[in-house]
Length: 98
Image (cartoon, rainbow, N blue to C red; front, side, top):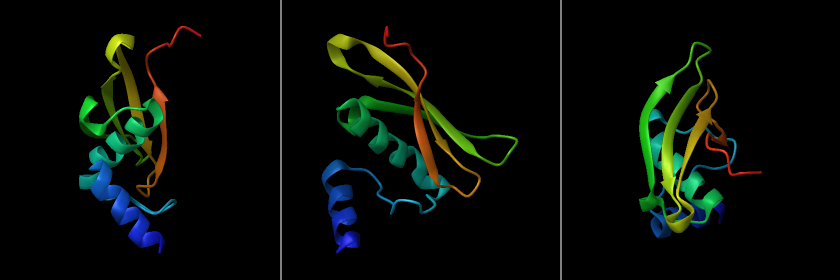
């Protein structure tokens, strides 16, 4: 049932769904990142732009990008994946004024 739910969510949102705690292949990380960012910022993946996958010295990877929040402006972010390819988090790189 979980697999069907993840597959359905992927089709509806245009993102690549992975089971929580599972590695995301390098080729799917930009799409996975767009899905996570769109959910966090309450927008569609098409408003999320991602850069290239960057490998860090410790083996982890990251993807920087921007999300267009309309009248609220553009926000910079970074998606992080650990050395095994598991999604870690989305870090806001633009201050939200708080």
